[in-house]
Length: 384
Image (cartoon, rainbow, N blue to C red):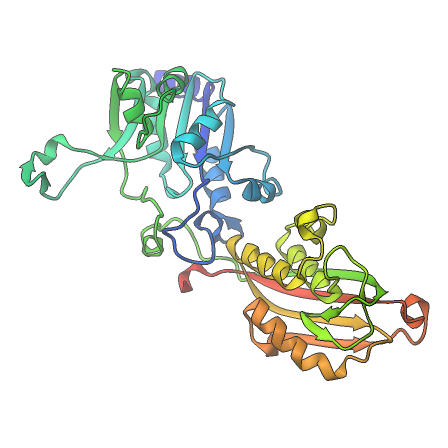
């Protein structure tokens, strides 16, 4: 027993974990990316990383994802983050550039319920071969090219897979695409060793798979609140927009974009609730791409991001501080426009117009300030 514990400890002390999650989730077919569905208050990718972290000790944990997702992931945990490529193999090669340990354990974030004892079986078999692979037996009859084959000689391959780092790096220096690490290692003529896998380690690919990944729990019902504020001075001769609605006035707003101060405040409120920074980070006024940009387009993109990262919009409330123009005739149109942009009912949108009692730059009719509040909840994947 002591020898086994020492063997596992030795292997763990020189093993890096790579979790792959740079895919587009195209087969998941919903507004939220599967790596961002929430189990209680943790996105799936974080839940998986922490499960591995609690199950074993690694030199380093590398999360492979897209640049947009990495930007948000860094707010959750201090792992090593690597931008993925246009295929699983390209993503793995990118990650391996950051690995100096003798061994590397590679898994997919989508395989989110890997039991701890399965991880131990893989790691404790380190010395058995150049690649250690968990498998499941085939229980159904199999045919290949119209002929039955011996199912006892077949295996269903799972991840995580443990490989010698030097050999995996060498095996991937080719244009040949491999479906997994073991086939890459086997192409070098190296030995692959099979260990018992687990039916619990089901890979989350489609919505239907959510019924098979029993380890994840329903999202927390917590409400997340964000606040946004924006101010713009008037600019004579420019068209004015508020909440995406054209306003009859001889001036608009001085701004890099169309200057819709209400939408800008709302974007900041949404991003604040989601913990995703602010409008200046996503759509900087130093970027020529956004010169004269339609703020409705920016809001649509923000809503898409909010959904993709696992959040549902509850309600919004805003106060438009302005002496001029008079906004009462436009308030219902504003609610209707925001309802379409946000994908929520008009009754969940409230717009208030107020003055500054002739005080300050607003009182001097030099510009407008908007305060916005937005509430988000986690998308409940059980209702998708």
